[in-house]
Image 1 (cartoon, helix red, strand yellow):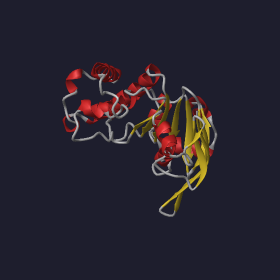
Image 2 (cartoon, helix red, strand yellow):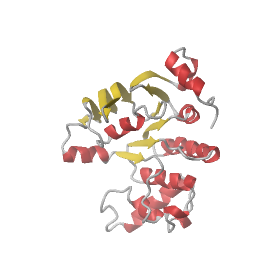
Image 3 (spheres, one colour):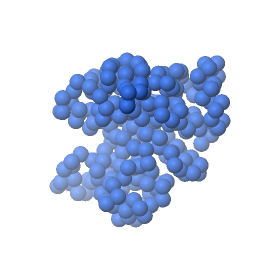
Image 4 (tube, one colour):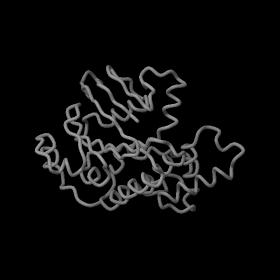
Length: 248
């Protein structure tokens, strides 16, 4: 389980997170929804120890991330895969090279056959054919790059998968494909997923539970249906300003 406890963070002198409390339950897909620039991605970066909080705690499977030593942080990160916004593939590596970066360092030494099986299985999960393995990211469409990024995240069979704005920059058709892919992959690999998005359609399609983060605090929390039905003014303001959520 992941627990966020009283998390505060200022960036550039501006308060970004102001006492966030949150639990991520085993096996669920939690969507953190909210306007751009409200600290959603900053929250994800605290979970993997890329940011240190000004106050509060982040606990991953009983390990406090802010106070963990190098070995403790490595143990936490070994359980977490991160799909960065805009894919963040390595331009100088082929698709195969990018996928292998999702495995522990030295994992393939002496077990090439097992690595080949993992690579093909990851491609299968994201509906890509083996002939893409020799291609470079620049030779792929934006949607295909996003699928490779997801394959890299799941190849190591991590316990948690964090998605940072996975449909940003994609046209509606490819955004729908990525939403459906995330939903299917989360089930197939039995991962606990956290999806950060400002896209209402993505949020309502993917979530078991939604958290609305705005002004640095959790404004509301519940199932998609509960948020659709709520009279909470912060939720109503956000939903009314966004395109109506529908099936992805």
